[in-house]
Length: 300
Image (cartoon, rainbow, N blue to C red):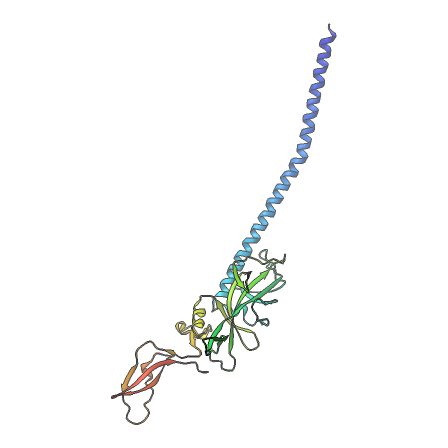
């Protein structure tokens, strides 16, 4: 009868020992696994943070680069001088070099192999895809058909006409993916992605001379038949950046008149017109010489 309580006491101590052993074992396992879980979570958060910062760096970089490309005053300094040889819609021109100015104004050459030490930006290639040549109606044939040719902008360069094209720029990142696909255009029925859709004017050697974004002052000027002058020479008179090309600009004022000059051909009354417009004699009516203020391309 005394043995039974002793056995029960032994069993109780054995169970307590097992519990202590189990708790100790669980504590050891948790002590090993928990730091691993915490380390994995921290590593994953750091990876996510790295990718988030990388995407932000790319977005800021390409947004600033796109603004510089779309501005007709800065675009030639960014992409001017590059050669575009493949000129059919859909053709991809590779190996372009862009000169990008960062927040401090320092120029950086953006091309294959570019690595920005201040961010997470790496570039494998800079490409220009031909969207379309900008056409200009030159003839209405019998029967109503229309003949079109690439738009030519002389801009006082009669020996070197500039041909206009629309191109889509894209930058290929280190994983050979197109970075930040903000622009989407349809080329021959195919949707093509890039980061900036601009117009470029090419000289006879296919080098980019001038360029600008869509729907800018320069684009409106050239779409209406003018030639946009983005040079610093026009800083004093920016309202005259849109130069005449194939046709003279006409001052919107009415025909002006001066008293008839009785000794032959009248001298030009330059005081009638505001430069760069010049008076052009239109004829005589009654006792007056009639004039119209015109601005014409010097190379026409």
